[in-house]
Structure formats: structure tokens, C-alpha cells
Length: 143
Image (cartoon, rainbow, N blue to C red; front, top):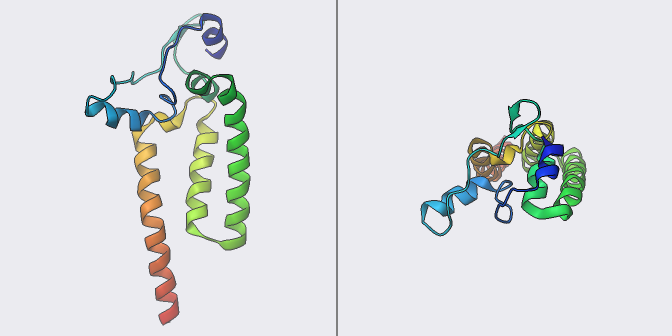
């Protein structure tokens, strides 16, 4: 699909539309932008499929800069959060590392950040984790 995508070069998406699809969906509910496509465009390779790698979505969203900077930033952030988690044991760094690993694991098939369930879970845990860490640290102080 990635080869066919480059060959056809006919997708026209807004900046970051595939990467931040849940945000675009919410904004479109207010009529600010047109509702983006739910599924990526399919290509015939000798069967119809739309299962491209995340590189396709990064290129459609950010051009060639995204194609090269995206994987680099994923690796850099995963390394950073792994080091921070190992040194501090913080749940926040663990959540960040886990969600980066989910992006990396699904990258062969799909840009998982397009999924609302991934996005809602990520935002929810970013809100809950500091509260949970504070609760656990207070609980440990009283024991």
C-alpha cells in the first residue's frame, strides 16, 4: 500500500489529520472544519486494501519531514521515557512509554492514533496517573 500510495500521490488531507484524527472529529462536530474520512483510502495491490504502515499517514500529514522525523521522534521519546521510568519508577513515565510502544507495535499495520479508543485512554490516564501517584505517595507516608 505504501508503494501504491507514493505512485498515485492523490491523497489530500489537512495538516496532521491522520495523526490527530480524534481531535479533528471533535472540531468537526462544531462545524469549524469538514468531517475527515474515517478510513484511509484503499489501493489495489492486486486486492483492495487500506492497511498501510504509519509512514503513509505521516507522509500524508506532514510531508517528507514527517516521514523522517516521525520515526526518529518515536525512538527518541521511547528511549527518554524508558530511561526516566527506570530511574524514577514514575507511573507517568510508564504510561507514556506504554502508549509509545502501542504506536510502535501497531505501526506496521495502522496509525493507532487514528483510533478514538487509543486517544481517550491516553488522555484519561494522563489525568488519572498524577492523582493516583499523589494518593499512593500520601498513603505510603501514613504507613
